[in-house]
Structures are given as C-alpha cells and as structure tokens.
Length: 316
Image 1 (cartoon, rainbow, N blue to C red):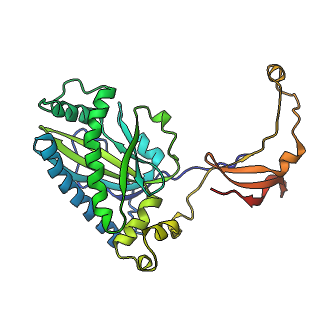
Image 2 (cartoon, rainbow, N blue to C red; image 1 turned 90 degrees about the vertical axis):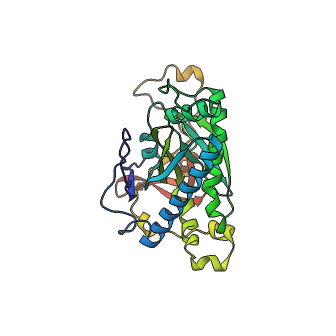
C-alpha cells in the first residue's frame, strides 16, 4: 500500500554570476537561501566567499600541475535534489563518486568528458586541445584524470580544516546516470559549479554534496555557539532540524512479505487468482523510505482507508 507524493526539486541559493558560452543555465527562482530559504544571508556570503577562495587556490594548483595558464571561478551555488543534479548533467557524462571521511554519504564530482580529455591530453604532454571530445573516457584516461580530481578534492576540503578535518577519496566512476543507485535521488544536494578556462576554451565542472552534511559545517564555520559544547564529531552526530524542510514531501512505501510460491505455481498465476498470505505477516508490515526500512507496523484500516499503525522503529 504505497503512499506517494511529488518531490520538491530545487531550492536556489544563488544564481550564476555570469554566463558561459555553450553552458546550460540552471533553473532558479526568486527565493534564495538568504531570503527565507535554508541559509541566512551571512552564512550564504561566507560559503560563497570560501568557494571563491577555493577557486583561486585551485587555479594556482592547476596552472602548476598542468604547466598551463588556467583560470577558475565560482559560477553557481544552489540547493537542488540529487535527481535534478543528475538531470542537469551533459551528454556524454562523467561522474566521479567520492567520500569525505568522516561524513556520511557520497558526493558527486561531474567533469564533462570534453574537459577531462583536454586535461588528459595535457598530462600526456599535449597542448590540451583534444580533437575528439564527444565520447566517454577510457579506463586509462579515467585513471589519469583521477590525478587531477584528487587535486581538486584536496583543495576543496582544505578550507574546512578549521572546523573539521575531511579526508577525500574517490570511490568510483559512472558514465550512465541510470546506475547511480548509491545516492538517494530525493536527498537535497548543495550544487557548486565552477568555470574553468584552459588553453583557450571554457568549461564547467560541478560538485554535489548532501546538504544535511554540509549545513552543520557551514554553521560551525560561522562560529556557531553549539561548537563550544562539543567537538566536531559531537556536533555532526546531533544535527539540528531545519524547520524550512518541514513541508518537503517524501515517498513512503508499505511492504508486506510472507507470500511464498513454488516456481511452477508462479508460472501459471493469472489475474483473478487468490494468493495465500501468512496472516502473521500483517503484523509486521515494514515502512520504507526509499530503499531503507525505517519502521514496522500493523496493517489495518482508518476512516475507511488502508493504514499502518507503527509499532517499532528499526535501527539504522
């Protein structure tokens, strides 16, 4: 008995400060995070300032690593669902999935293959002007590109060291968005996009991180008073609920197991047949949020509708 609802897709933080030729604009609305949104203006300004500083540091690192004058600037900052983050990716696409220890969850670093191939060409001693860029990267090219992606991630976590030591690591890669099943598509993500100019061309790369992980770090970066009552691990273990998320809809599914059939019987079932269900299983209906089982309840009716009375909470 599933209960479904529409998922809010985007809550903009700040629109890109300038347009990039050939880049796809990210949808925004008039409600920014500093205007009744998820973050106060002061924290939003702090985050933007930090990311602009990261862009300047990365610009210097890439210029040295690639032995090529490069320019990096912050192009956009907003909060959207991971579903929207994936939908905004170009074709072909190249996602690097990464982990920031000790934070939970997985982040996404999107590098357009056209940019990745230019970087690889430069690493191999070329001019950084790869001709055939409308294709996916090979395994060897992906391994070479990871050298630069590790530089990007190392520079990105560096400013956060004042509040939390983060250790980045690349977990894998994906070129088909359909198989990005390690990330909840309904979760809110902080999307940070950067423009990079290299070898006469301009491209964009994006970083996507779970908002729930980043928000406490932003507040601690601002000198949140809660940081005085415990270390980084204590604050992250007890996050504060943001009332702005009260009306975000979630998809819940009621799952009732206990239906056992032989293979021979399954091959002959048809519409209209009655299948036996263990009655005791109706006392153990699981409530799922996405693919995770959260509660166990008793199946019944309420006001003439099917309903589940929660009886037990499942441990994470």
